[in-house]
Amino acid sequence: MRRIELSMNEIIKYETIKKLVETNGNLSLRTVQRLIKAYKEKGKETFAHKNRGVPSKSKTPDNIKNLVIELFKKYNKGSMVLSVKHLKDILFEKHEISISTTKRKLFNF
Image (cartoon, rainbow, N blue to C red):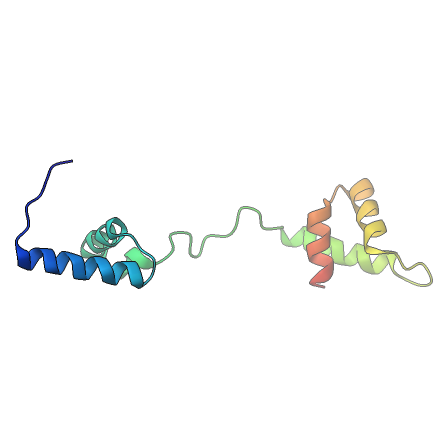
């Protein structure tokens, strides 16, 4: 890395910005420099999350959600009320629906 000579006025500016960065937002000086450069090139778009509007890859399809709810209603009719664990076992054995999918859908039902 090359050595950079600064005047007293430039040193004061550098130290002021450095203190500001360290106390506000926990961003390193390098990160601030990178963000400033990106902002000059792209504008506000720089600060928006890049995955905004893109569906999650781990999202459970609606047909699986609906199937879990239907099966929950089906197996919990009448006197045969299943515990969540037992229902998860049935769903995995008969319908190959995993435990994490089942758990989330049942508690949001």
